[in-house]
Every structure is written in C-alpha cells, then in structure tokens.
Image 1 (cartoon, one colour):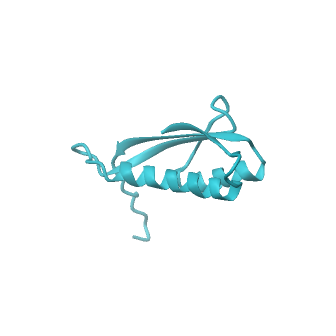
Image 2 (cartoon, rainbow, N blue to C red):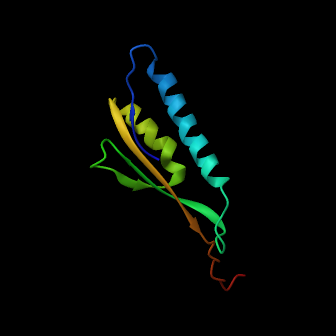
Length: 100
C-alpha cells in the first residue's frame, strides 16, 4: 500500500476520517498477514514509511503507525503519505545469556 491520505473532506469530520484511515490500515495488515507464506518463511514482516509528503517519508515500525497518524492530526496537516510493504521473514533466536 502506497497512499497519500487526505485529512480534509467537505462532509466528513476529521475524527471520523482518522478512524476510517486507521481501520483501512488495520484491515490491510490483516489481509496481508492471512496470505500464504512462501516456503522457509515464518511470518510476514512489514516495511513501513510515514511522512508529511512522499519525498519526506521516513521508516517507522508497524507498531508506530497509529502514532504516526495521530502525529499528522496533531500537526494539523492537510494530508500525509503512508507506505506499507509486506515481506516474508524468519524469526531469529535470541542468544543465550549466562543467566539462562
């Protein structure tokens, strides 16, 4: 998903727009996670970017997407850019420590 979301609408108020954007992002993540994994992959990982515009987009973690959307509202932006790309990944084991 590569999309520029508008935070202004002539009939829909901003809080409802924010809710619909968060719902759309959550629905996209769920849809991607339910896809069949390729052989050798453990889970779907996501490369996410957020920015006030596509040129200024910076990488963010999946867990920070809602905070990024709230950041756009806090700065009273007219629009913001969000990019979410799914990729297969493998879990890594934590190295054992002396305590274990």
